[in-house]
Length: 551
Image (tube, rainbow, N blue to C red; front, side, top):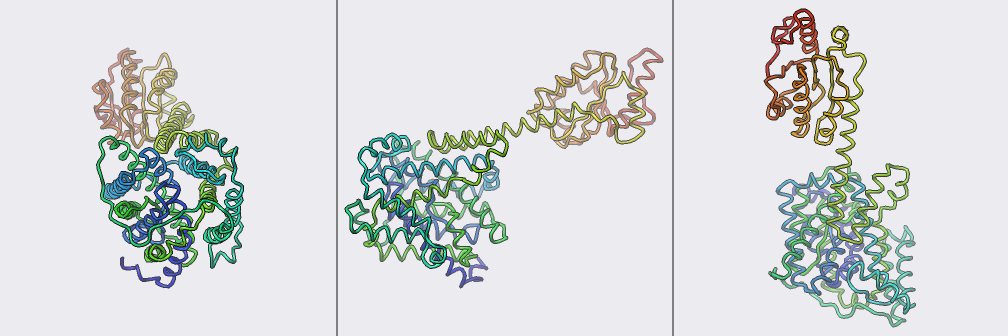
């Protein structure tokens, strides 16, 4: 908190500008959620103020965002507009985010792969656009993405050209508003004002009466029939809000050359969403566009986000009657721009030049987001990405196993290996050995063991860690070798790898451990020499002064 007043002038300017930008978006997203424009303003005010006050990204501006509204709109349709249960879900989502922060989950949320993030963000943008098509055509489509899509033919058969022209005009103004004028009046606000003034000359649907004044307290309620639905929505809101906020935090870091505190940011977002639910506001998260506007206007510290919220409070207290004249078509035009801005055009333009698997993953997540649900899309995307990564690492590990260097690190090792040629097999593992490569390790070793070999050396000097699956695979290799009458030497294993091997390997009493590869090679050459002389497989003697460590 000590730096809250270190940039007062810039923070006030940035906060006011961000508040002006947030106004039309809060109104539009509130309407899109089904809870009304004031719910959007209340949410923007509460999340904006408390996330700034308690969060971990000083320059971030928070408020209603597309991903959160998509979930709320679906919940609104599922609950038949039961506002009390919806606000209960918002409160629960905020509490979950606070728990995420205290449990340190923020660092893991940032590990979601980029194609997954790109896919679900693009899917959310597509959903927002789909939900507004009917309104642009002068109709009120049924809730849900599928319902809105199936309603499009009906809307096309009865187009209200006045609303269509008004909505498209709003969209064009928002996109084409001159940058010079944008310094004083943001494009979205200009589109809102101009579109509303033009609508006064046409009979188009408007928002209608909007309550004025401070919000009333909304206490959480319990409904056993819809309990699971509310909890599921709360979990989705919490996770998406966390991802959305932390992505925006990264953008802010890049612009301000600072580093945010992920877990503190989640706590701040959680407090903001909890308060928003209690006062009848919709859930929010870190908003990228508003954050960028704030930083470019001079905002650097948490005071800017608090000022942005106070600007919205002033609007709530005094300008609600004017907002009642805003047409649905104008808000639909603004929301279409929001949807288009969310779509990851930069990745789509370059996707064909990158790995095909990543693009396929992105499209899979996109399809699941639009046609199934967001949590399934993210969950499936993360699992598929993790499996692909494990497979890639496994292929690298097996390639290392199959491509032993012809020349080892020093002359003595090369000499020893040549002396034992035909009788000694050396296998060198590399990288962390995991379950991905475990299934194929035994197969690859068996294929490369020479028929006349007497000693199998497994070199783990380049393996920092090993899981149980890999240890089981090594146990299979050693069991096969011992059963075939071969001796097994393991060398270079660090303490962690030895611990895993010892806990799993049932044949450890028949394995000899060496600290280094050269020690194992000396012992192997000596054992081969004694076998030739005495025709015996006894390998329990001392080897050239190197004392083996029995497993």
